[in-house]
Length: 40
Image 1 (cartoon, rainbow, N blue to C red):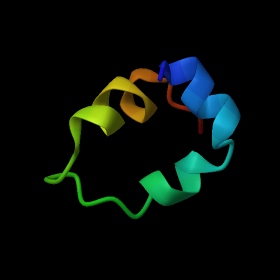
Image 2: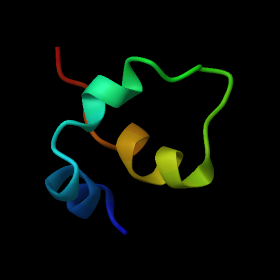
Image 3: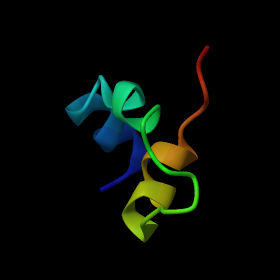
Image 4: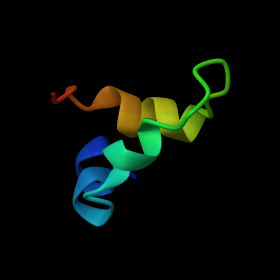
């Protein structure tokens, strides 16, 4: 899954990211959510 498909499939993913422990991140999350531009 590309980062763009991920973003379209889960438009509210940034709410979940706010609760993620920065020390724990999967390869999937790195190549999808973390590859997308940050928004304020």
